[in-house]
Image 1 (spheres, rainbow, N blue to C red):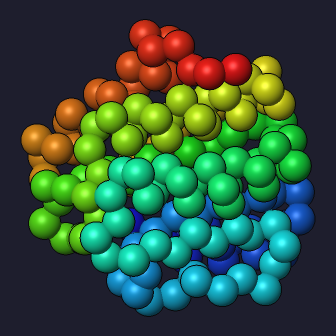
Image 2 (tube, rainbow, N blue to C red):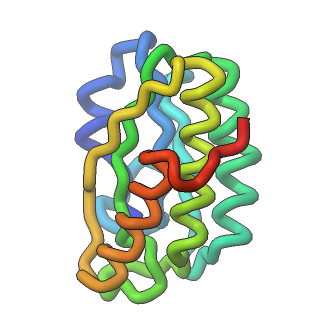
Length: 149
Protein backbone atom coordinates (compact mmCIF):
# COMPACT_ATOMS: atom_id res chain seq x y z
CA UNK A 1 0.00 0.00 0.00
CA UNK A 2 2.85 2.40 0.78
CA UNK A 3 5.01 3.73 -2.02
CA UNK A 4 8.66 2.75 -1.66
CA UNK A 5 9.93 6.32 -1.54
CA UNK A 6 13.13 5.34 0.27
CA UNK A 7 13.90 2.62 -2.25
CA UNK A 8 13.15 5.04 -5.07
CA UNK A 9 15.53 7.61 -3.58
CA UNK A 10 18.30 5.02 -3.34
CA UNK A 11 17.93 3.81 -6.94
CA UNK A 12 16.69 6.94 -8.73
CA UNK A 13 20.03 7.40 -10.48
CA UNK A 14 20.83 3.73 -11.04
CA UNK A 15 19.53 2.61 -14.45
CA UNK A 16 20.79 -0.95 -13.86
CA UNK A 17 17.92 -1.32 -11.35
CA UNK A 18 14.29 -1.42 -12.41
CA UNK A 19 11.97 -0.43 -9.57
CA UNK A 20 8.32 -1.40 -9.92
CA UNK A 21 6.22 0.04 -7.11
CA UNK A 22 2.50 -0.60 -6.62
CA UNK A 23 0.80 1.47 -3.94
CA UNK A 24 -2.40 3.16 -2.82
CA UNK A 25 -2.58 6.74 -4.04
CA UNK A 26 -3.08 9.21 -2.57
CA UNK A 27 -1.89 7.66 0.69
CA UNK A 28 1.11 7.98 2.96
CA UNK A 29 3.81 9.05 2.06
CA UNK A 30 1.78 10.97 -0.58
CA UNK A 31 4.29 10.64 -3.38
CA UNK A 32 5.45 8.34 -6.14
CA UNK A 33 2.66 8.63 -8.68
CA UNK A 34 5.01 10.32 -11.13
CA UNK A 35 8.54 9.30 -11.92
CA UNK A 36 11.19 11.18 -13.82
CA UNK A 37 13.12 7.96 -14.46
CA UNK A 38 12.33 5.42 -17.14
CA UNK A 39 13.63 2.67 -14.82
CA UNK A 40 11.12 3.48 -12.06
CA UNK A 41 7.64 2.21 -12.86
CA UNK A 42 4.97 3.54 -10.50
CA UNK A 43 1.61 1.79 -10.20
CA UNK A 44 -0.58 4.12 -8.13
CA UNK A 45 -3.99 2.61 -7.41
CA UNK A 46 -7.03 4.13 -5.70
CA UNK A 47 -8.53 3.38 -2.31
CA UNK A 48 -10.82 0.38 -2.60
CA UNK A 49 -8.72 -1.50 -5.17
CA UNK A 50 -9.58 -5.19 -4.97
CA UNK A 51 -7.92 -8.27 -6.43
CA UNK A 52 -9.30 -8.19 -9.98
CA UNK A 53 -8.38 -4.51 -10.49
CA UNK A 54 -4.98 -4.97 -8.86
CA UNK A 55 -4.15 -8.04 -10.94
CA UNK A 56 -5.21 -6.35 -14.19
CA UNK A 57 -3.09 -3.26 -13.47
CA UNK A 58 -0.09 -5.36 -12.36
CA UNK A 59 -0.32 -7.51 -15.51
CA UNK A 60 -0.75 -4.51 -17.83
CA UNK A 61 1.92 -2.21 -16.39
CA UNK A 62 4.51 -4.09 -14.33
CA UNK A 63 4.85 -7.48 -16.02
CA UNK A 64 5.68 -6.04 -19.47
CA UNK A 65 8.24 -3.68 -17.89
CA UNK A 66 9.86 -6.58 -16.06
CA UNK A 67 9.97 -8.74 -19.17
CA UNK A 68 11.47 -5.89 -21.20
CA UNK A 69 14.08 -5.27 -18.51
CA UNK A 70 15.00 -8.97 -18.14
CA UNK A 71 16.25 -8.80 -14.54
CA UNK A 72 19.21 -10.92 -13.52
CA UNK A 73 17.94 -11.01 -9.93
CA UNK A 74 14.56 -10.12 -8.41
CA UNK A 75 14.19 -8.43 -5.03
CA UNK A 76 10.66 -8.28 -3.67
CA UNK A 77 9.56 -5.86 -0.96
CA UNK A 78 6.63 -7.94 0.22
CA UNK A 79 4.09 -5.74 1.95
CA UNK A 80 0.83 -7.25 3.07
CA UNK A 81 -0.88 -4.09 4.29
CA UNK A 82 -3.08 -4.19 1.17
CA UNK A 83 -5.11 -6.98 2.78
CA UNK A 84 -8.79 -6.16 3.18
CA UNK A 85 -8.51 -6.72 6.96
CA UNK A 86 -5.59 -4.31 7.40
CA UNK A 87 -6.61 -1.29 9.50
CA UNK A 88 -4.18 1.26 8.02
CA UNK A 89 -4.99 1.19 4.33
CA UNK A 90 -7.77 0.87 1.81
CA UNK A 91 -7.01 -2.00 -0.55
CA UNK A 92 -9.14 -5.13 -0.57
CA UNK A 93 -6.61 -7.85 -1.39
CA UNK A 94 -6.83 -11.38 0.01
CA UNK A 95 -4.43 -14.30 0.32
CA UNK A 96 -5.24 -15.57 -3.19
CA UNK A 97 -4.12 -12.21 -4.59
CA UNK A 98 -0.77 -12.47 -2.81
CA UNK A 99 -0.39 -15.99 -4.16
CA UNK A 100 -1.05 -14.70 -7.69
CA UNK A 101 1.38 -11.77 -7.30
CA UNK A 102 4.11 -14.10 -6.04
CA UNK A 103 3.47 -16.53 -8.89
CA UNK A 104 3.91 -13.69 -11.38
CA UNK A 105 7.15 -12.53 -9.73
CA UNK A 106 8.45 -16.11 -9.68
CA UNK A 107 7.56 -16.56 -13.35
CA UNK A 108 9.57 -13.44 -14.24
CA UNK A 109 12.48 -14.70 -12.13
CA UNK A 110 12.29 -18.11 -13.81
CA UNK A 111 12.28 -16.55 -17.29
CA UNK A 112 15.09 -14.08 -16.76
CA UNK A 113 16.94 -14.61 -13.47
CA UNK A 114 17.39 -18.37 -13.21
CA UNK A 115 14.73 -18.33 -10.47
CA UNK A 116 16.72 -15.97 -8.22
CA UNK A 117 14.41 -14.11 -5.83
CA UNK A 118 14.98 -12.48 -2.45
CA UNK A 119 11.88 -11.38 -0.56
CA UNK A 120 11.84 -8.85 2.28
CA UNK A 121 8.89 -8.50 4.64
CA UNK A 122 7.77 -4.88 4.45
CA UNK A 123 4.52 -4.59 6.34
CA UNK A 124 1.07 -5.59 7.41
CA UNK A 125 -0.69 -4.36 10.52
CA UNK A 126 -3.36 -6.98 11.15
CA UNK A 127 -1.32 -9.87 12.51
CA UNK A 128 -3.80 -12.57 11.44
CA UNK A 129 -4.05 -11.25 7.87
CA UNK A 130 -0.28 -10.70 7.80
CA UNK A 131 0.39 -14.28 8.86
CA UNK A 132 -2.00 -15.79 6.31
CA UNK A 133 -0.72 -13.56 3.50
CA UNK A 134 2.94 -14.14 4.28
CA UNK A 135 2.29 -17.89 4.43
CA UNK A 136 0.65 -17.76 0.98
CA UNK A 137 3.67 -15.85 -0.34
CA UNK A 138 6.17 -18.28 1.19
CA UNK A 139 4.30 -21.33 -0.16
CA UNK A 140 4.88 -20.04 -3.68
CA UNK A 141 8.51 -19.07 -3.01
CA UNK A 142 9.15 -22.54 -1.57
CA UNK A 143 7.64 -24.24 -4.59
CA UNK A 144 4.49 -25.57 -2.98
CA UNK A 145 2.52 -23.69 -5.62
CA UNK A 146 3.82 -24.07 -9.15
CA UNK A 147 4.29 -20.64 -10.77
CA UNK A 148 3.39 -20.18 -14.40
CA UNK A 149 6.45 -20.26 -16.65
